[in-house]
Length: 407
Ligand SMILES: *Cc1c(COP(=O)(O)O)cnc(C)c1O
Image (cartoon, rainbow, N blue to C red; front, side, top):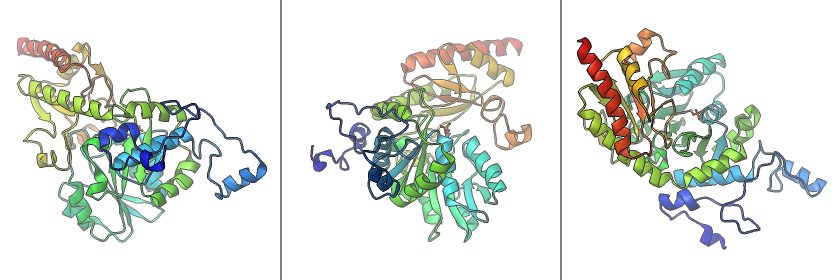
């Protein structure tokens, strides 16, 4: 096949999740590229070995430095996010740590959104501090705050949108504008949206990161991450923090994610359809006190849905007219819906932030962050929406009746 015919850059994303990037040519003509489950690569002669190490000849050396199956995933996700390169990693945190640590040295400053994933928060607040990098956490809902807090030594601005636990939305383009002529890189964690629902590069992001554990893989059987950027940035990450701290991706995981990615478009549409139906149901149940979902007109920055974000996503948070005991009784009454952290899987998952993802917070910090004892987060899966709703209904009804009886 000619290089021209393989080029997919003009294709739509639904095609690119299947054909994007370049696939290794299989001598047997296999439809699916083979899995290169190997730790190392043989050199045909000593000159080839030295030439590869010297970077004078392209080719693989050792799987921590690169592997054809991992490369295939990298080129596909880079194409989806509109970047020229990507680096895959063992976990989402592996990508976030390798990326951000490649950009800083002691004495630097970084600006971080106050609503980010818990381990990203720990990385920037605890580990960065140990190495003399100051992380400043600010509310970026008002983008002018970014301008105010930028310094000459600010290396990056890091954000996530929508973000746990209240699905906080940030305006990526407004934040890029607020960064003005700063040399700081804008890094967006696009895990909740995927490139199909939100395209941070076209809004000004310099680097886009994913926990591929979630929607990209989509089947709950892999922990993985990936970072997309320009060639120079990605080469730097690959040759320093990723290679030397070693959180690189297993070829088997890359192969599974390539398989999962093929259905990303159909999955995301179904996830969003189901989430909208679940929200409509929750809205009219007596036990529901408040719903946090970007698709609701009442949600702060709801206007970004349909502009920055194609759809509202599949993660919903809600609070009950009850107490922690009631919230736990509701969770324990669920039948099909799995009580588990994570998101983006075929199975609908639900968790209780106060006692799970946000349990390291002190009670005071939890209260300040608005994480009440009855706040629950549901990651809506791909089952028939009627079955998801039926399970929620029977569990909510059981708590509501107990609640009425005790009142
Ligand atoms: C899960 C998650 C991460 C961390 O990814 P892992 O694959 O668990 O390391 C980072 N950011 C967001 C938004 C996540 O949901």
